[in-house]
Image 1 (cartoon, rainbow, N blue to C red):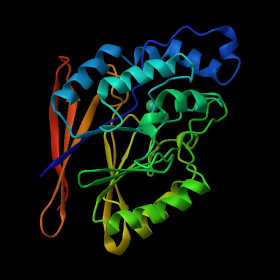
Image 2 (image 1 turned 90 degrees about the vertical axis):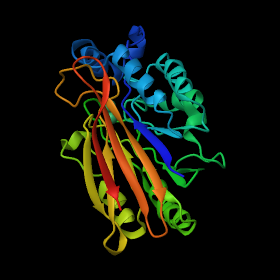
Image 3 (image 1 turned 60 degrees about the vertical axis):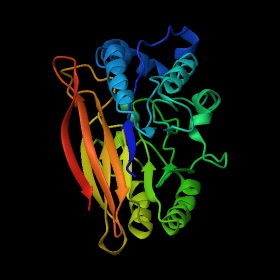
Image 4 (image 1 turned 120 degrees about the horizontal axis):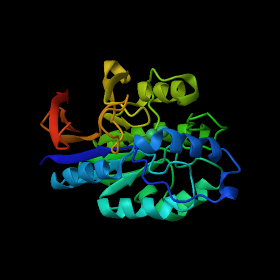
Length: 294
Ligand SMILES: [Fe+2]
Ligand SMILES: [Fe+2]
């Protein structure tokens, strides 16, 4: 039986709630000014609602959300983000990993945990890296969200998550599950240094040694497919989606999401990717269909 996984990312919920001047005495001031100057014209709530309505109409078995629901880590952004997640489904059907905009300043970590923790835990109630088994899938959630200095949008997995990841990948391979790794920052990217995953090399070494069937990421706001080396010549697709709220005509890809239809025959996994994208007329349509592994 085919399992359908949907992937959307970089929600960047608009509008930004009112900010008190004290809330802006931090890195938030640069993010706030950036929002007022530029990003509020880029991220559109009506676009997001159209994209998510189309996604839900596809009735996927599970939805992966790879971060950046929030913008500058204001406390009021988290209940709004919770309402968004609740609108998609329950922790049984929705998995979330945070991005740099979700863990924007130190206090954002607590806001995210309190409002969204239910969607960031595994079947055993564990934190990152978490594991959810859904149908033939092992959904492995990683957090790259760490507070950073102004003008920095880097992400870091850290030693503890990296150490736990290899054994988790081995265990789930032994269970012959289709291993999907959720991570906000791309493990491979052309983006500038201040936006990168600082321990990307360590991450790709783990994938090379232990493998995975699919890596899903956000952050770059681009529809992009890279192939990462797995063990014994295996090829691991790492796929990014555009921001789900991108207004038409920005310098990044138009808003959309991906669907993965996953099944297994006697010998191998089959994973078909379907790209759905908002067109100029405001309709969301399939624009590409591609077999990722045979
Ligand atoms: Fe983002
Ligand atoms: Fe990001």
